[in-house]
Length: 72
Image (cartoon, rainbow, N blue to C red):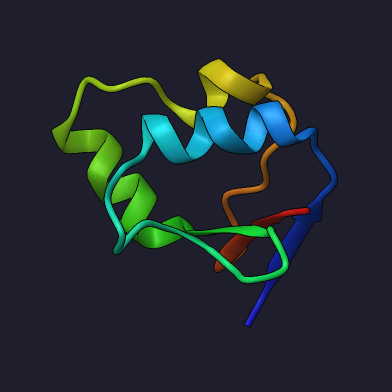
C-alpha cells in the first residue's frame, strides 16, 4: 500500500471534506487526519463536476500513483 502524506491547514481539510462528501472516498480519522482513497476519488471525479482536490491544493502536489492521500 502506497501512501502520500501531506501536511495542510485545518481550513483546507474542511474544504476537502465539504467538497468530497462521499464517505467511500474521504474519511476523517479521530486524530483529525483526512484520508482519501485515490482509486475511489478518480472514479468519482470522472462522474462528477464537483470541486476537485486539484482545485483546492493545486495540480502539482498530488501523486496519483499512490493508494491513499493522508492530509495531516
